Image (cartoon, rainbow, N blue to C red; front, top):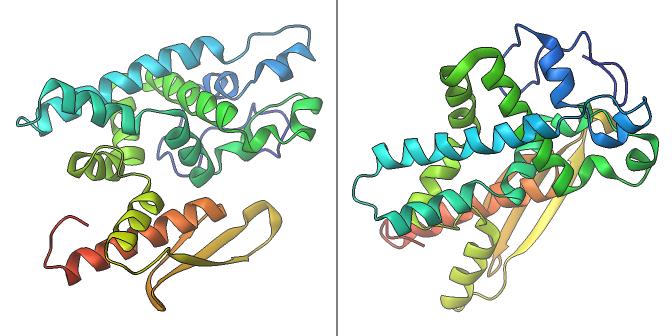
Length: 239
């Protein structure tokens, strides 16, 4: 694997995507942000692959949802797709898989925190999906997208927008008279492979815990676990 900002010619895969490239040049192109390219004489950036990946991603989610949930109306399917295919979710995918560490950024963009900007992270996620489609075709792209987003699609089917587990948990906790949930987050590991564990407390009880590559991911995982706990305590109904 390459270090952030270094050449990507020997990079064949992104851990967490579950796909190994036949042509690593496609992955290098997918990781090439325009700021990086501008510093190298205007070489091609990942923007065309981002365009393709956006279309491929949307079609895969739409196709899967259409065939998996025959009882959903077109409006419900549109809401489901929008709750999964958006910048926030795709940026979370990039953080969870460590994609941000591999982006080829210009020095200025890198120093200004570009590796953690939702816009850059979501764009490069789409570009990598586009590159996978070019390298391995529809089947490979579909497998990767469902690997990355399958759980979120399932969540969104229950209630579109529910992928924001923290908001859902807070709404339910307040409705039940338990007040606003509180979170405890602890980080561990070296800076380049930092992990976080979060615990969420509701009315003095620890209802869930979760782990992630960022504090946000860990808190979302903990909130999801807490929502499941409340579902069980309330007899299996939707929290």
